Image 1 (cartoon, rainbow, N blue to C red):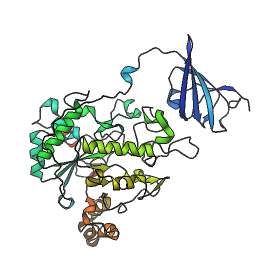
Image 2: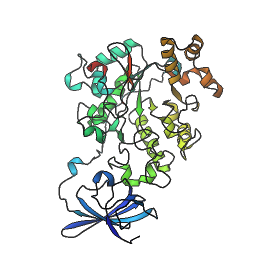
Image 3: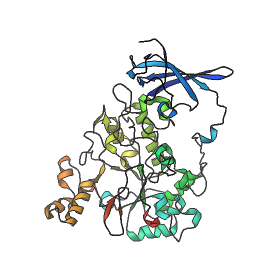
Image 4: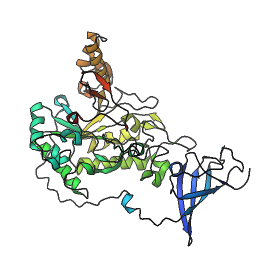
Length: 440
């Protein structure tokens, strides 16, 4: 094996540290990378390496022949020569806004509706009011639109006690959607865990979205309605190996994400390309700080955790006594709020319906499946009886009450009602879906 060879990397690899040096005509990038396969000859692609598209060649310890081989040892140093690019990237780089809010909460207080009286209405901030005729055009599909008197009146008349908003953390669209001139509608692609999604603001995106969200929550509380938000801490918008490097991957890739044993790729328990490692102290701190921010600063009443089994994983196994579950259990702020688990993920042992601790309520898909099956004639009256009486077979063995079960028949992200009345599954997460109800 030659000590040096000019090659190009065509497969994915993980960059840990990049250092730069320059002269008058070009830049030198030294990449400290974790084991990867290299192939010679060829051209380095930005999609596979996550580095500037101007890269023209790469010099690395590797095979001298045009063959693929796993580099040993797994940690190597690579020097990349690039052409200088003086273009201004500032307009395309995600930035943050520092907000000094003087928002007046007045006598706002959480309604604290008991679980046994709770009726949840799940909706999407944009889709909820996008075509509502009573709402001013500039407020449709925004936090202000969701707090319009016509909307509040409608919710109160329905008799619901709690409104659960699909993700409102700031998110971005996946690369494959952008390439097809599409955008992510549902919002399960978070990049900003402390920021309300800017597109849902009618007043501006330089901090105004914070006060507008707060005003919405204050309005709901004044009407006796709780606000629960759907939160996605199981993965980030950086996606898989071919995804963009926006934040966490560049800060500490092997700290923030679950990686394979050799560190060459991501472990994907979410179906979204990566999995945040909530068992790592820094990641756990990030999640808890975010939750407390939304509880104490934004006054939300609770959280519905997307793919909660992922957050409970320690050393890749679901552990209800692990760091995340234990931290929530003892937190003096969070443990008093409504905590709703989506009790599964796509990894081994991820299906945990009935397995969460006492403080938690769970989406009960057994209720959904049984009621649908009974409607179609494939479930017995006894099966239906278990579900209508609180699913004691799932929750009573651990001393949990019937209100531990969130009973639902329909999930808008996975099914829509066609004109024939037939329930049809929608596309997978991150791919094009049907329009919101008021847009069809």
